[in-house]
Image (cartoon, rainbow, N blue to C red):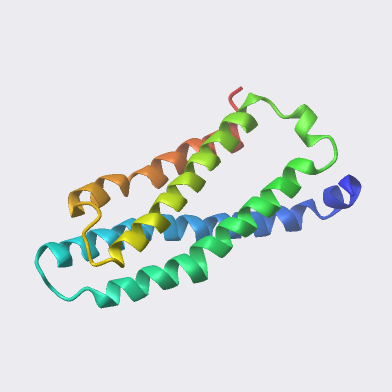
Length: 149
C-alpha cells in the first residue's frame, strides 16, 4: 500500500493542495458572511440570504474540502517512509491543522446559533476571528516549504 501511495504521490499532492485551497477559501469567507449577518441582525435588517449562503458554503464547499484534505494529507504521510523521516515540523503542522479543524467546527456551531434568530456574537468578534485562518495558513505553508525543524 505504501509503495502504491508513493507511486501516485504527485496526484495525491495535487488534489490535496486543491482541497486545502477550497477549504481555506471557505474559512476566509464564512466569518466575513457572519460579520454581514451579525450587522444585519444588529440593525434589525433582513438576513435570511446570509443563512442560505452560509449553509451552502459550509455543506457544499468547506466540509467536503476539509474531509478530502484530511484524507489525502494522511495518504501523503503514510507514503513509504515519510512519517519516520519527517521532522518536528510535521507534528507542529498537524497541530495547526487540528486547530483549523476545530475552528471549522466552531464556525459550523456559530452558524447553527445564527439559525435560532439570536445573535451569537457581535460583528466585531467575527471581524477579529476572520484573521485566524490567514495567520495559521502562513505558519503552515512555512512549515511545509521551509521545514525549519
